Image 1 (cartoon, rainbow over the protein chains, first blue to last red):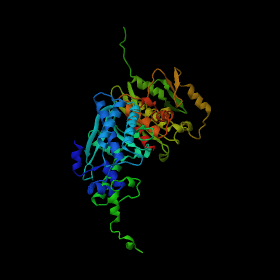
Image 2: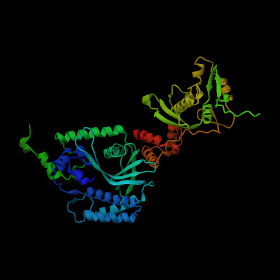
Image 3: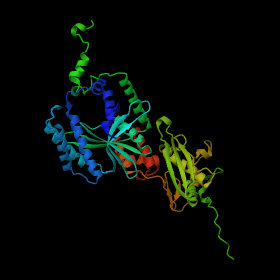
Image 4: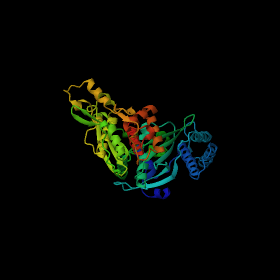
Length: 277
Length: 227
C-alpha cells in the first residue's frame, strides 16, 4: 500500500478532517481549490523532520540496533539541513530561525533518547499506511501509523509521535480523533480480536525539552462517535459548506491568510458605500 | 480376607456447615474444600457492573468455576449497600464477587445449602424482628474450623492447606503493555500507586500484578471513563 497512490484518489484523512473542522475555508483552499500555500510553516517542517528521525530510530530497532543519542542528533541535523537549508518558502515564527531550530531539534532528540520508554515492544510496522472504508462514507479514510508494536502477550500498541509547544491535557489525549481513526483502521486491518492500546509519544518543545508518553484507549462507542463525525464532515464537504473560522489562534500563522482568505472575505464588499444604514 | 478398596465420592465435611435458627448454611471455606477434593482447576471472577451513584452503588460480578475435567459453572452475584451488612457497604464489589463465587461453587459441588457468606446480614436469617444478639454471632463463630485458620475480609475462616487464589487458570496474565498503560492512565488521573492497588483489589479481589489480561482491559476502560 503506497500512501502517495492512495492520496491521488478522493479520500479523507485525519488531517483533512481536522482541517475542515477547524476552518472550512482552509480545507477549501488546500483540498478543493488546491491553491499553492504562500509559505510553509517552520513547525510543519520541524515536525516532519522529527518524524523522519524517529522512523529511522525504529527502523534500526527492527534490525536489532539501538541508535545512540548522538546518532539521533546527527540524523536530525542531516534531515533538517536537507529540508530547511536555503529553503525560502519556510516562514519562521517569531524568535525562530534555522540554526535555533537545529540546536533545539538536537536537544529534543537527546531528550527522547534519555526518556525512552522502558518497555520496548516488538515492532510490527513503522510508518504503516492504511485505507479503510466505513459504512455511510463514500470515500476511504487513509493515513499512516507512525509505529505499531506488539508486546509478549499480543497486545497491540499504536503510537503517534508528536512535537508540541506544551504538554497535552487529558481531554486532548482521550478525545484525540487521530488515535480513534487508527484504532478503527487496526480493527479493520487484521487486529479485530486483539487488545489495542493507543499511545502518543510527545516531544515537548519547552526551554528544557521533555518527552512525555500518554497511553489511552478507545471503546466501540468512541469509534461510533468518530465515524458519525467523519460522515458529517464529508456531508459538509459534498454540499460545499466551507465555513471560515477567522477567530482561531492559528489565523496569524495560516498559509492561506494573505491573500486568499482576506480576498475571500472582501468579496462583494463595496467599501463604506456598501454599508447598510 | 482383605476387602477391596473403594473410593467414595467426596462429600461436604460437617465441620463446614452451620445451623442458625433451624436453617443449615454452608461456609465458603467448606465449598472450597469440597471443590478442591472434586477437582477444582480454577475460579475466574469478572466484574460485570461497577458500583456507581447512577446504579445505586450496586456491583455485579460473574464467577466461572472450571474443573479439571473441563466442566464450567457460571454464576452471577450482586451486592449493594442495601443488601450487605453495614460494615461491608464500602466493599460491595468484593461482596458481589464472593457471592458469585459461592453460587458457582455450590453448583459445581452440588450443594443446595445457601452459603453463609452470600448473606447480607444475620437479619437475612433471623429476620428484623428476631432476637439478634451478640451471643448468637459468637456462638456460630465457635463452630468454625480451627485448623490453621486465616481470616478473610468477610470474617470467615479458611484452612491454609487448601488456598485458592480467586484466579485464574486459562486466563492470560495482564500484559506488559497493559500494565504500563494502567500506570500511565492512573497517573494522568491523579491516582497514586497505593490507591491504584486498593482499587484493583476492591474490584478484582487480586493484587495488581495478579490481574488477568481481561481484567486489565476492563480496568483500562474504567480508568479511561473516569476522565
